[in-house]
Image (cartoon, rainbow, N blue to C red; front, side, top):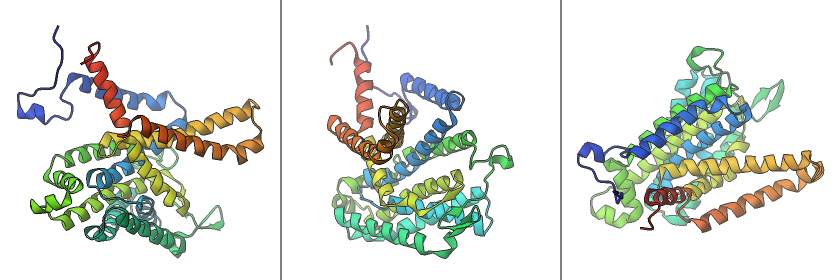
Length: 362
C-alpha cells in the first residue's frame, strides 16, 4: 500500500494550479454544490445571515491583505466601510448613477481615501500606525454625522439615515437586491468568488511578494530594491478597494444606512475576524468572518429559546442576556486563540493533515 508523503509536481502548469490534488477538487465541487443549494433548504433569515457573512468576508480579505500579508496595522476598517457605503448610496440617491457603476465607483473612491491615510505608513509602524488609522476612523465618522447631504427622510420623518433606492439585478423587478435575500445571495457569492481568485493570484505576482517581504523585514526588502513607500500605499489602496466594495454591497443590501453600522466597534470586529481566522490567509479571512458573524446569532437564538421556554424572563433577556452574550463571545474567542494561535485556518489544516496520514502517526 502506497502512503502519501507529499505533493510532487512534474510540470510547471501542475505546480501553478490552485487546487492541484484530487481531494481538493472534490472538496471544491462539494462546496460549490452546497452553496448553490443552500437558499432552498434554509429560511430567509438564515440566508440573510449568510449574506452578511459573505459581505464581511470580502472586507476581511481586504484587511488581511493589509495586516496579515503586508504587516500594516489598521483600526480604520469601519471608516473605510462607511466611505464605500455612503459613496455608493450618495451616487445612487443624488446623481442617479446605476447601482452597478455606483458600487465600482465607491470601491475606487475608498481606495483613494485609504491611500491618503496610508501615506503616514512610511514613517509610522506598529502601534503608531494603528493610532493614525484610528484617527481616520474618527475623522470619517465625524464627517458622516455632520455632513448634511447624508441626512434624509424615511417614512416621512427626518433621520440621519440615508434611504437607498431599489437595485434590480438584470433590470428584473423580481430580483430586487434590497430585500430579495436569494437574489442578493447569488450576486454577492459571485463577487466573493472573484475577490478570492483575485486575492489569491495577487500573491503569486511580484506585488504580493513585495507585500510579504515588507511584512517579514522591511529594511531587507528595501535593500533588495522594494520601494517601501509605493508598496505600502498600494497595499492600503488595494485593501481599501475591497473594504469599499464590502461597504457598497452593504448599501445595496439595505433600504437605509446610518453611521451606527461603521463605528470603531466594527473596526475591532473585523480585526478579530482575521486574527481568529488566521493572519496572512485568504481562507482564514472567510473562516473568521463566518465565526464572528454567526456566533452572535447563535447566542441570540439560544437566549430567545430560553425566554420562550420560560427559563428566563423577558426582562432578563433585555437587560442581562446581552452582556452574557458578549462575555461568552469574548471567552470563545480567547479559547479559540489558546487552542490554536494561528487561527481557524490552521486548525482546519491540522484536521486535514491528520486524515491525510491516518491511520499512521507519521
